[in-house]
Amino acid sequence: MQGVKEKVSFYLTAAGYLLFNLRPAADLAVTVQSTLWQILQTAPYVAGITWFIVAVLQYMSDGEKVPWERRFRLFFTIGIFAGLVYAIIEYTAKGTAQ
Image 1: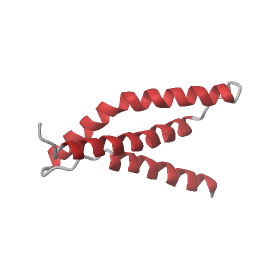
Image 2: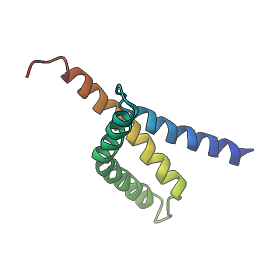
Image 3: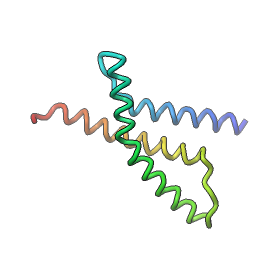
Image 4: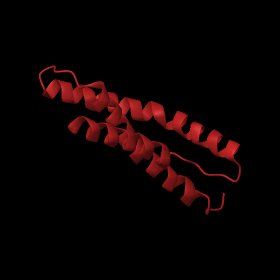
């Protein structure tokens, strides 16, 4: 049962990552394009932060490797926070005069 519970939580985390990086628009094509652009813009930063955290975790555990599922889960979680922060900045900047 533990394996099913972990898989479900993994897929929910991945879905949350996509949801928090979703950029809705009037047209489906524009929504997909904006969402992919958002993910491409934030992915390098999220991957770098994830790599750093994994390196620290491996150092703290005397070189024991972090499983790939945990790495992806960290990536998705950090990506959720990055998507949230980016969305707040993006939506609050729309109301300011430029």
